[in-house]
Image (cartoon, rainbow, N blue to C red):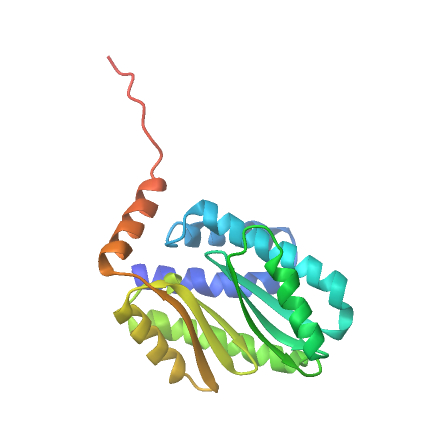
Length: 215
């Protein structure tokens, strides 16, 4: 039952951004909110990561314009930038711009010097990501919410805070998913004790305090 719920939430999180209208916006908020409660990052860190992505994208768009296609993914304040830029200078500039955004603690610059990818290529990457996430759920050896997947030009990037067995399972699933050309491991390895600590802390933070004034 829990596996089916997580699968539905993950699918909804990937699908809803492409939809239009008021209801999808509300539904997306609910889906994202539920997934946030399962994340090992604190809600504060998740909020900072979202702010980093927005600020970085705006600054990159203002600097690089339509000649570049850059995706920004922040996890635990470490930022992955993928996509295509027109020159090595633009690639270096993009890294510097993101590095200056408040709260950024590191940048993984995976940009390539090439023309912007096509809509078909990007759709294929999104499809590969959905397949990997779906297989994470089927694998059942770790909580798929703990691993963020970004696919660019058939290369799957994995981010998250996981134990070594969880990392091994996630990497194994990603590298055997059809369409994946290569897997880039950006996972932060934590001890099982630390994982339990984070999971318990997140669970406790989602339980509202009760003030008992009954006589």
